[in-house]
Amino acid sequence: MLIPRTMLLRLGGAALLDPGRRYWLRRCEGFQVRDLDGHAGTVDHLRFGSRRDVPDALALRVGPFGLRRRLIAVNRIVGVSPEDGSIVVNGCLCGDAAPAPRPRSSTATRPGLRPGRTRPTPAV
Image (cartoon, rainbow, N blue to C red; front, side, top):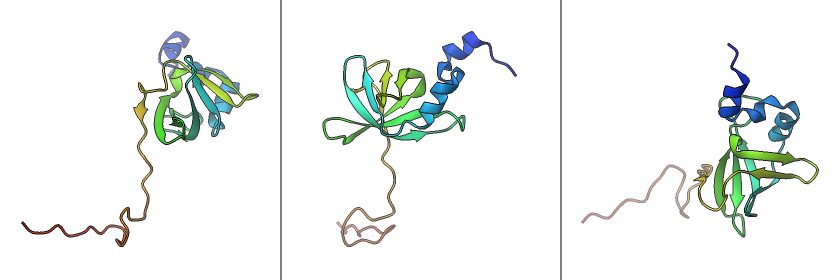
């Protein structure tokens, strides 16, 4: 089934049309991401879902120390510059994007506990 080009562009498929852009979107981990206001983040990892050759979203580390995480949909990308290692996105990175869930770790979060175990709650 062929999708008209105008419909593809409306759905955010501009990234899917350009082979050079597809190539760099698959290899953009570590790139600096800037919005039009100048806020910056770093691509932590890519999220694939609907296609294998183009990510659906970029997981970013934002903030002064890179402690906050954000997911940015690929259709928000305005430009990719491999020479600078940078990506420009539409919108704001400061708070409108959905926070990315933290990766699950197999270790216990509290000291002295084995994975999968919880501390018993005291009876009232």
